[in-house]
Image (tube, rainbow, N blue to C red):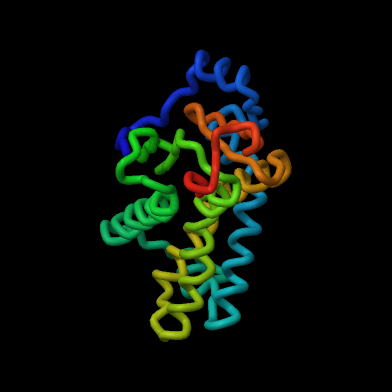
Length: 213
């Protein structure tokens, strides 16, 4: 695992080698900024899903976040900034821990950029595991966590706000999931070359049950 403050770049020579060996590149947004722009509708959808989950087991209202019909009161202090930073780190760690051999692999990258945190692996990974890695932060933090905290009676307004923030921040993950489900067939393995993703049928690759994730 490598820690760095910039995302790995796509290598043209690696791209040609992958294509020559029957790897198919996915059609993806050309930049992270474009991904964020395209994911705005999903941001709203994610928030609605999480609000629904919270409202099923607890309560949620605009007043809890300092928003009323005639005023807006949002307090941004050092404590809030620290909570948001911790949320960012935890979100990326949930991506990371579901990647096989994430500690030993030198093809896994994690870090912070101007657009937020990222986790990226250039190891081969099955489609099912790729989906798990992509969805883990949203499912755990914005679906399962509010249910658990509600049942324990400790779901505070601050935690609700952080859970909602994670839900909206997961919109790019959901966009990646949609691209994966609409382009990549079953029984495939995926690999990244920098930020570009490729897929290949398992039977066309030296990939068996001992290495399948």
